[in-house]
Image (cartoon, rainbow, N blue to C red; front, top):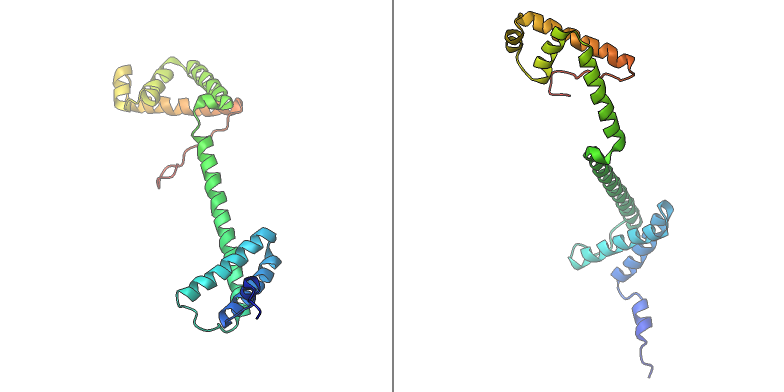
Length: 195
């Protein structure tokens, strides 16, 4: 009497579900290979077969589904779309992480910016020194020492309106001089909480 060979017994489909799984695997492999490369196509096909197995063992599949080819092709499409979305999200997170790292670097780690900041500091000092004495004092008191117009006026012995005029004139002068030095001035937008 012949003894059954275990390797041939496993290879031969024994139930409708085994036959369906082989068909699902073949359809998934074919559909996935049309849209992506070897390893990724195999992974997608394996995911599809695994999901059919899980649903069968959970009792969700009790008979062969109608239109298996359409269903499997649709599932392959969905898996590939999901993979693309996850890859895009990962790329976006990585890009944001790198951007945060670059933006939050200390000044000593950005020699170009440190040099620029040093040059701007020197330019700032030079421009303030170029202002007439009363205008310079008014500007420094209001913009750098954060005093009110009223306190600055009292300190300098002039009216708050004159302080305002000196500060505005100093700012206009700075904008003109910055432009002549090649520094681009971008005014802040006020209102609605936007910078």
